[in-house]
Image (cartoon, rainbow, N blue to C red; front, top):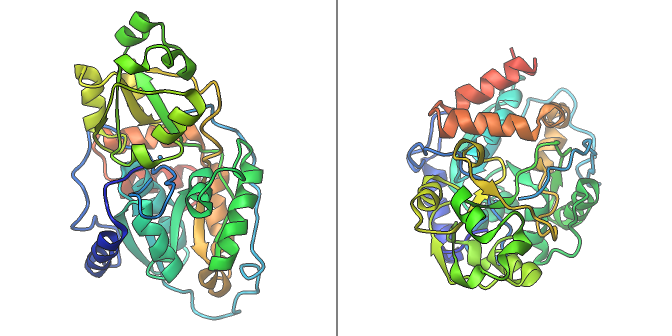
Length: 354
């Protein structure tokens, strides 16, 4: 859902970031300063040259369903050493939390983890995954499917169907999407109570008669994203007065909404500020947002060499809910706790690590 970096520049930045990252859980030198809000995820870009990706709508509570590619189903090498796994996150808090959840459950079971936190947008992270510069990243089903397929015709509000469509485009890349969780994070659009009352705004379609008077603010990539401004124009016929590029569901967007610099703010649906600041999240009544359930995407080589990697990672997804994400986002983004500590406490509470 974002867009100001060129792919060539992104590749060069990726090389620098990867060379700076080391094994262990400390933040990388490129990690952004702690936000006062819980940022949200990347949104699906329309073209790889646009800059990268998050997600409003009701969170589908689907049970996880595994869809493995044929190569991923190959038998792991028995008795061999567990492989090192290079795990990355996107450049917002929630993604770093998810990186830690999946990394720590592997780490506690004998895998060596090399962390690449806040590596960048999807335009940087996804090519790094395909090329083997990283091995795994926690993803969002519909957003990734649309990013790779360059359209949203196969993704839907059904996470099982969307997972299948995603696996179809991942299989030629020797990648596998594992079980999806019940945790869903989508692009959400919020207004203040005052704006809601002034224009009688409760759902996204209510914006249509007044959008020309309103300023939309959010991630810089929003204008290029099919689940952001492109989708708002296509599905809701919204033509805003202006767009103000801010941050990825972070403190700049929250502050701009509070201060009246923007009228409508793009925030992730798992952002605790929506409740804490008493914002009105507009209902996605025409269902622009699709099944963005959280699921790790991993290179088949790791699954083939790590006999228990699949089951360990799936054990995290089986427990994770949307309310869990909102709570952990609050701890990191608002209470300023370390993502690694928050993830460990969660895993311990679910008896997934000691």
